[in-house]
Length: 215
Image 1: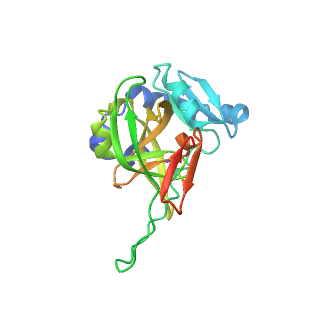
Image 2: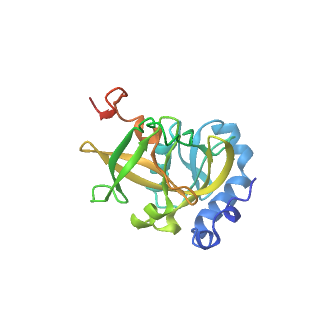
Image 3: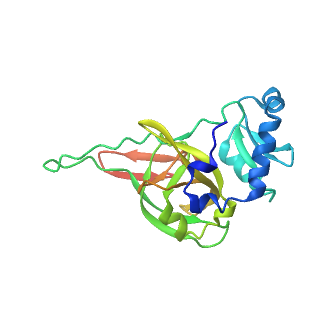
């Protein structure tokens, strides 16, 4: 087991809910039992039992969080696998027009059904497992650190960094969708990942340099 809490910024780690820490420790104490029952599945674990399970991490994350039991959410047997961001960053040749990025303006909501904040220049990235936002944006959303769930994230070059996951919602084209948001403490890019994109019909019109949602 990798010591995740110690990888977070100290001022963030101090605010992680102690019940989450308890649930994490209790999960590892019965991990072999969980592997025998849930190998390869995502589960939410609290108070000694699995309280949600399934193949979709965002669905399990939201279902487990709705219980209010500060669950430890993980993919059984793959607990230390980071949530991968496969967006590659390249240095532009400033003497040549760079390729345009598929970007969106999206409303992020901390609470379902209530107005949130609209962020622009959100990159639609089908290579990203989940949706990362810079920590400054997470603060604008007034997310409660004590309700964040520690986890791992990784970039295209490999390696991993500690993150906090939050169950939030994305409002796009008049529809609200669950989102598995991860806080990026080092990066500055806004990325919409497959946790949301897989719930949409999206048309990338490269020659026209536009993205059409639900065409």
